[in-house]
Length: 61
Image (cartoon, rainbow, N blue to C red; front, side):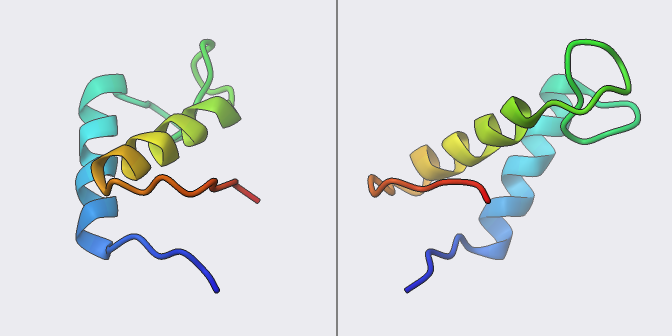
């Protein structure tokens, strides 16, 4: 069984992420502009899980 986060929640989290980190080229860029960084995506997932009170283990894949 999969775990789903509501569309509106994801959009709100992405908007908040964009406002905080102001990515230029990539949504999940690293410390160097234009460089992809997977930990940024993990941070977005962690924030989404906290906001939705999901305590089950979840992985990106």
